[in-house]
Image (cartoon, rainbow, N blue to C red; front, side, top):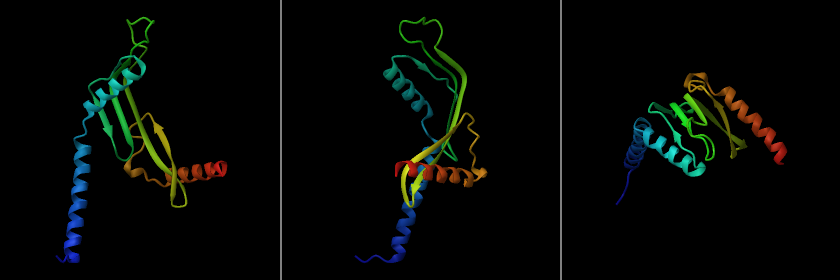
Length: 146
């Protein structure tokens, strides 16, 4: 069986199209409630304390990873009064911009810059400044690491 370049390019284009569609569907239909309940379960298992997250959950993937939730509360540890939570917030919001740390073409780490505002990092802001911060951190770390 002989394949032509046209068949290969069409097949590759179809594969890329399916992958892009899968990524878009994942972002649009991301199971926020399921992720929130899993976070509650894991935190309770790790700390022995109850975490309660509200029902208004927002997750962003672009241009930065972001998360916001209303009415969050973490219970007191055992031995402390249980009538009020250890900590409670009407709304928790954060966003993270991630930049690779590089030595030439090799990535040796990841620099995360966080914010309490989900709109802090947005698509139109450009990445020149954030990229420059990543370069400067890379150089500083490489000097210390040798």
